[in-house]
Length: 92
Image (cartoon, rainbow, N blue to C red; front, side, top):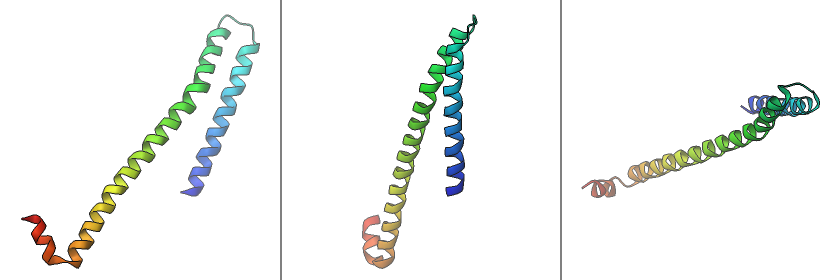
């Protein structure tokens, strides 16, 4: 898992560097399509990292939320196993 995360982080850094290079190249070339490509490159340079950050934030929150419910279920099950008489009182 740790090796996969490193590879993905390196690929993301390479993608960012390529986007910055494309932005610079589009800013320097003189062509009718250059301005449109430059605008798209600026938008991608800003939007892609922001969207990825939002995705990671939501994934972390959902993972924590599901982890909390699992721990509550585990602790309730452990209480039922330790005190079987009190567990029947809760169900009635």
